[in-house]
Length: 318
Image (cartoon, rainbow, N blue to C red; front, top):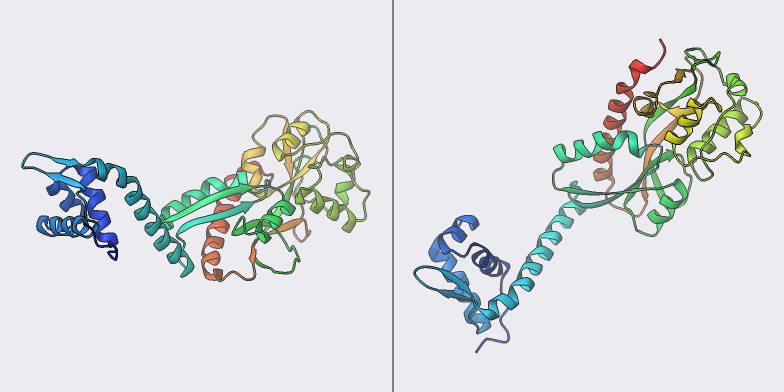
């Protein structure tokens, strides 16, 4: 009869699970890195404490008893929970490890994610990134509600309770049809926005708001497409409209390598000193104590951006 006060140790539970999986004492001991006598003692202590037989031993094979089979899923779940607890605690200590819910806006995600995820896998193999792509307002709401841990988006956001970590400035590149007189130029000013017949993303995308703001700064008319029935929810679709010669657009430099490979479009860049850019940063709850952890991730985000930008340089006019 078992001792009702008995509490098995994680080491004993792990011993039982490993024996049940390996079906062999020698291989189970080798997997756990302990001697076979120590393995047998740990199993015996577990069975004596519980007052039940979990494993039938014989000279030829190991058999899990029906009671052992019934308890095995609970034993595995206990070990999984313990491992998750340790992983989460490592993340709380400033290490990039365990689950991390990362929000990214749609005009950043497709262009930096390949390099970002590769960098995470190489430098922080214990990190489990969970990516959420959505518009800025949605991500900020999820951040406030605790559904994501941080977000990569255009800053500043100027919201109470949210801290910002600026990462990099990203210049805009004009995308026009090949036949546009501005195609291939490297000396655009903000006044050129008047002549571009700009196509914009749909409402809710911060890139749309940034382009409209540039037009205000340049004192040019609000783009006609701001009230147009033509709507697009992705830069890929906007560029396809440019291919059809329905207008021009502005894209972030990290998108050049992906979006400017289509025939029929050309790039134009702004002159040195023209302030046509956005700032991308990390935002997170001010109550979070993972600042140093997020700074490490921020370096990977910046590196991923630099790789994406470098990959598109050959498509830009010189």
